[in-house]
Amino acid sequence: MNAILLKGMQIYAEDQKIEAGYIQLQDNKIIGVGPITNLPETEGFEVIEVSPSFKAIPGLIDIHIHGVNGADVMDATAEALETMSAALPKEGTTSFLATTMTQSQAAIENALINSGNYIEKQQSPGKAEILGIHLEGPYVNKARAGAQPVEFIVDSSIEQCKKWNNLAKQSIKIVTLAPEQPGGMEMVKYLNENGIIASIGHSDATYEEVTQAIEAGAKHVTHLFNQMRGLHHREPGVVGAALLRDELTAEIIADGVHVRPEMVKLAFQQKGKTELILITDSMRAKCLKNGVYDLGGQAVTVEDGKAVLHDGTLAGSILKLGHAMKNMMDFTSCSLEDTIQMASVNPAKQLNVFDRKGTITIGKDADIVILDEQLEVAMTFCRGELAYHRGGEQQ
Image (cartoon, rainbow, N blue to C red):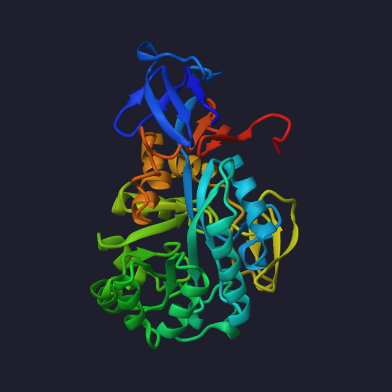
């Protein structure tokens, strides 16, 4: 297997920052990390010298992403997932959840079957790894639909969800739902008992209803602030519960469009670095030019960094996860280490893959991102293989 030695850069390792270090990658795993002064025998390794001003960070994990570079999970083709897996390392993402959206039963089932098959049989090192599926909808609230097509929204059905997870080869990891809708609380309980994360999203729940959902096992909030009952001084709503309850980890789209920078800062001050997860919620237009694109059968216009439906409703983002980290630092004055926690460590822990993802640690998957002085992605390794190197293919 290819053995690679990265040397010379700063390393943001799990429990320390190494100023001039090395990382050894072999058989898709990290087999050595430390300061250059402790560098062991390098024979048999391909040596890549990295600038001392560059930084090695763990691969980023996007737990909520619909599409990129012209492809969408709902296309329900292996080619679409292949396109996504190949494109995402350019922004530092080395693993992700293939995220569906509210659509017809047949369209959702096709996407689940396709994603399940791809996850089981078609993944390879050198591309971003699909860790599972995030089922966003159709068990949401029509009053908070956002870009989820209202005509396909249905009440929670445990039987349907069981069937869908079977079709997906048991790869559903997160279900976004509105717990206040008929069958919602029972669904939360079922998901929790079966090791699937119940996430409150596209929800008009009151504070009391969110509290009830937490008691039933909810532990996550989908794109905090967006398409949920907001904060009111007499009704804290989903937002108030998300900010106050430590049981809930909250995703946030830090693009400055979906959530104003001041509100991102408020969320960070309230939740801290351990209870926020940076996501993109990006759609197929990411990495493409301004224009009109499809999202769940709806026309989405992309212009000046915004993706909107015909009525102006935000329809996913074109945010890159690496840029979300930079935005987070700008909006909140947090450190790079804090953003690593929010984009790598927290999602790995939430998905229960921290034993192999989320930090630069011996024995874990060799998912490594090299950032330059401007914190732009220079190189990305996915399970020990070079997946992106800035150069000829740079956008």
